[in-house]
Amino acid sequence: MTTLTVKIKNDEDWDLLKSILDRLEIEYDITKESDYDKDFVSKIKKGDLDILAGKTKKVNLDDIWK
Image (cartoon, rainbow, N blue to C red; front, side, top):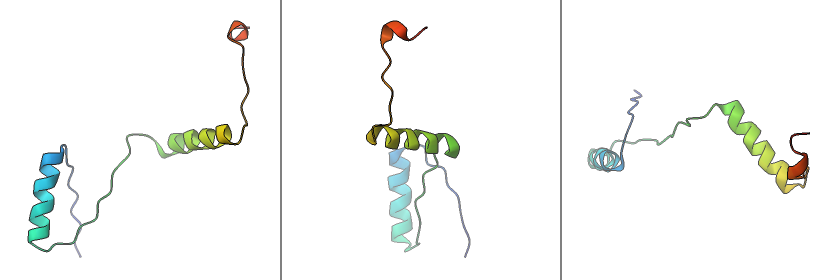
């Protein structure tokens, strides 16, 4: 098997390429690369889980620079 990586910039190009691959009966997998570092994304997701679990601290705006 050979792997081909194609970087699609817009939906019109993707639709055209997809129709060509379908017509030729070529199997393909779709993967999207993130613009963000994986460690950064995991920290954000952990923060979201902490918020849902109530692990937050409320800070009064008057005290924010103290």
